[in-house]
Amino acid sequence: MCIVPCSGIGLIQRLASRPPGLRPARRCHRLTFVFTLSLPTLPSDRSINALRPSLALEVRDLSVRLAAPDGPLDVLNGLGFELAPGEIGSLLGASGCGKTTALRAIAGFVQPSKGQIVIGGRIMAEPGRSTAPEHRGVGVVFQDYALFPHLTIARNVGFGLRTESQSAREHRVAQLLEMVGLSPWADRFPHELSGGQQQRAALARALAPAPSVLLLDEPFSNLDPDLREQLALDLRDLLKAQGTTALLVTHDQYEAFAMADSIGVMEAGRIAQWDDAWRLYHQPSSRSVADFVGLGVFMDGRLGQQGDQLSIAFELGSLPIHDPADAQQARHCADAEGRLQVLLRPDDVEHDDASPVQARVLRRAFRGAQFLYTLELPSGQKLLALVPSHHDHRIGDPIGIRFTADHIVTFAHS
Image (tube, rainbow, N blue to C red; front, side, top):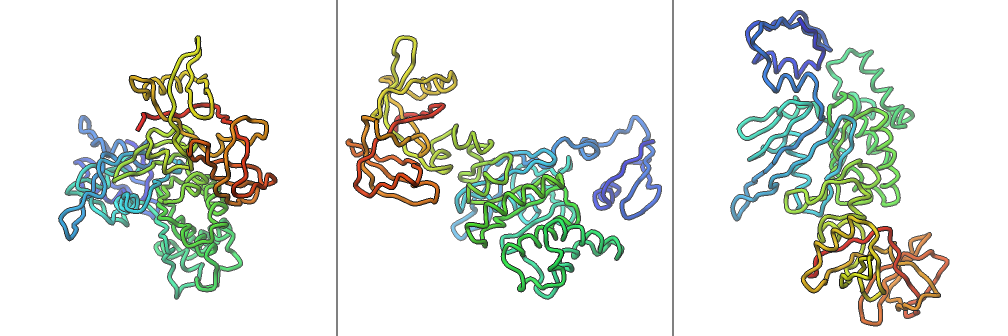
């Protein structure tokens, strides 16, 4: 005999297809069922995974084909990633890459044409089979928040708790409003709140039923730019405190960097690189990822050997490669003549008046603590540099620069 506590909806689904010998002992809101197992009949692998899942969300080789005027359109093509319990992930990409379709498929609004979606160890969707959205145990925060305009904030938050007793519902709503800092606005209506407050109300409503996975569809896009990063950090702290697994969909890399543990850069319906923010920025796996994540330029260089030291000769001088992984990558990228390209980020180019290498200021963008300068080398090659804003150079001014980086990122010569 084993006693298995779990959510009512998931248990009721499994009881509908229970093997002979399984019987419920009693029924309550948070159900506890006593099962008598008649060996050697064993639960299916889906039931075993449901009892003790090691992953909160798995997307396995997911493809989605949608109808279009010119014929079927493959929006997702073999998408795959996974999130551990309490992990925050992000799908990052430009418009049209399929990230929102992926979120809608996970939520249950879109049917996959191939692959599987597994939540808490249970297969929720595969071709020909799909669990209804309300039975997946996911919460969704939409781009426009989708708050009910005729309900107060407290009633919006408690909307998904209608099966709870009044006292339990009131306690949960008060707890969530306190958590998101909206207790004083509990009796206000959505139109009486700012955009940031509405975003927090939508988050509280999504968290109220304690979902297994929280899905966030560009939740900061309607907010002022100066609020987005701060709210992303606040939201991350809140989710981590709750131990909530979450997936953020966004086109803004700074939102993804601020909030997510792991980020998948999407291209043409699949993930080009799934990594943490530091590796995506400093060690992109492809030119397309390097172009999308952060700013930078590619400069021609030639790989060579100086004694025991591998180095790259390019317009800014000779660049020694100290990291073995960087050296291996450079050898892989170089053609038969040693030609390759070096990725230069703005923070790799340092202002140095004493440097013999001079560049002319073409453009400048003031960013408070720094200027982002677009510079031109004597050859006409352009590059970017972040310079402290007390170095106030005008367009056309020459400035000295040098290249500084802890590691060298190289790609094949185009």
